[in-house]
View 1 (tube, rainbow, N blue to C red):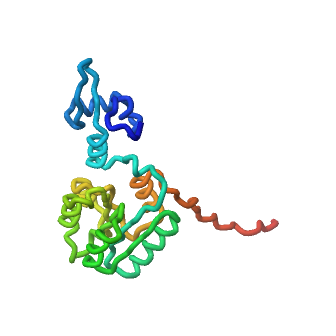
View 2: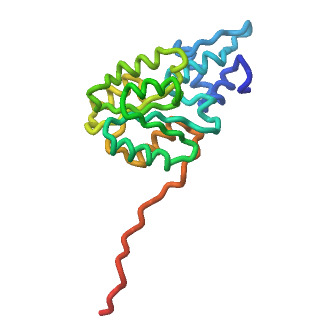
View 3: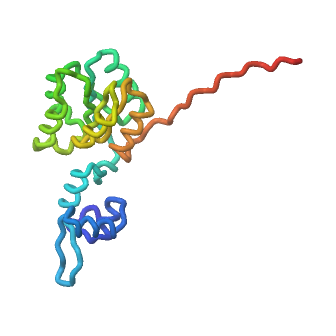
Length: 210
């Protein structure tokens, strides 16, 4: 089925893990292009379905494929940048992480590194992240990239602005392993993540006899 160019609503539903009735609703609402056969059955082109999933930040077939995923981490503070990169690398051996020191180097890496995910520093006064992200989405060859943001001032307004701009999520700084793990699960459903480590409970010490 994945190799077929045209899908039924049932096949399209299996392809993106939703009910065929949901697919039909997308079609009827004009969200997903489709055509009807002479018998009245809906048919969906694979390329239209993939474009729909990408447009709505839903996983496509390539997101479930095994293999290395590349993350471009943008953080202006050097210590925070090193710490976040270290946490990301520890979360999965299938992650390749680049953490450039400035926006110029980050721009170069968008083409040479070809990241799957960009994590913007929303606090960087030298970076107009919303304009940069809009440009990435308009650029042929880069439109597959997904993005998230991080800020020390995580407010409802900041989260809404990120959602409106098409970010997967807006995280709070300093970046913690749990939040980064959740982001990776969202962005890369098939990524192999290292076992989650839980802090040990503090020992109460030996009980004293009365």
